[in-house]
Length: 82
Image (cartoon, rainbow, N blue to C red; front, side):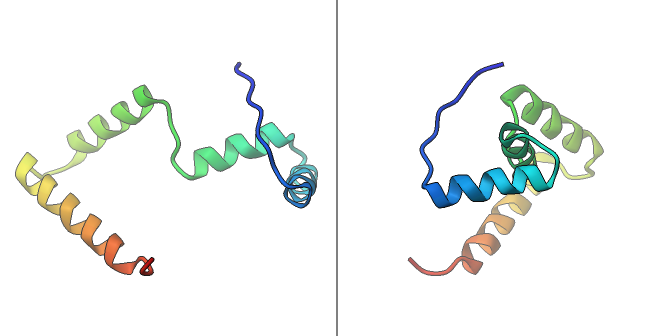
């Protein structure tokens, strides 16, 4: 397992430590769960997920691309202006 060093404010560190303790977890376990929740996956796992989705879909490549572009535009349209 790899190690990682990050810099957090004291307030953020205390909140993270308290959240981990409240869940009966370590800080590392809490961060790992958060990454999983947000869909951060190893490349191989992401590729396998896409392959399973393609196999379960009735869309051809052109339809899948059209749907993906439409969904991307929808998400971007909902973002607040910078």
